[in-house]
Length: 421
Image (cartoon, rainbow, N blue to C red; front, side, top):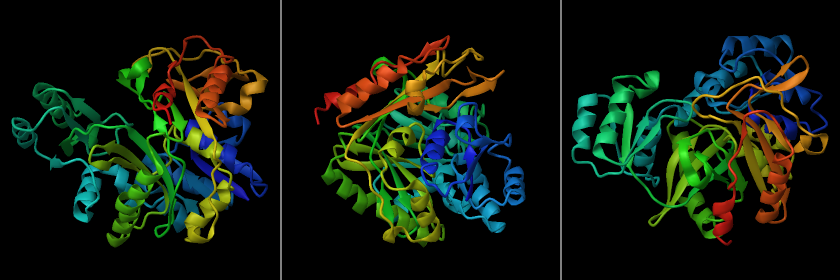
């Protein structure tokens, strides 16, 4: 089979590595891929948002199956365009990807179908939003409606901060068109949990839960990032909570989308908070998370390509999806200064004995050498029988890798270990 994976980060590298385990995968193209992915797939210099270019390439190269991984091409209708040319895909169509593409849509969906989430109001008029904040409780959360590279959420501790956030989004267009509509919602407290799931629109199979570490600095300090590391499974996600989530959140969401004429097929990501009132949805994503994928897929014992095809074909209920009982930890190696400003072009040295544990996110090939090309450069993952062993092994591997300006958090997994479960 000729496979094509859209995207060029650590998430896509993890997906490609797992797809390669199936002997039917003769060739895998990555569009655009990156310097590290080039060791595992044929990289093609077509941007993930170039839907016409992607579709033309797929036709010219007789692609048998495509995986559309990032949010932007999904929301732009990449799956729709490929399916129109007869190319089967893993990923939701545009009318289902809206569950991530519009926070206003997703919040209204949850309200309509009684899916637990934070109390909220939506606004498309700045003055109305500012007036609402005069009496709204604080802290409060301000969210831009559309995609904003994971940065369109501001937690405001005071009314002044909240109003400044509204002005920056709606008047100053900090996030472009994404801020034309906003959500102002209740500030929730409790442990956060990420649960990725396979769904074919009828059946839903949750993957192993995970815990992300968003802040740039140790002890959850500093700016929010795309994710500085992850562990799986999440100790706060107990069997009882998993059952509650399945009955009150997961299946109701899939059924709600189908009832709205927006059947979701692909990876549906649930960002949850375990509040004193029970689990609630913080956000939906219409795709695999990054870097959650780098700890979840290494624990998948079933064949990923087979599972993905079952999602596409609507036969997930008849397909085994099995995960190991072990643990995984991913430590992100970043460029110092991320997520604000950082240097690029530094040579990366990865010893051969840890190469298979490395998922490349922001790196390029220059004169045959791997060099830094982004804020999050690499994700280094280890699996083990216990979480402590996985964390130790991930750091041991990460510390063998060198590049100038290298930075990582030193406390990935500490919160999970402290949970004592």
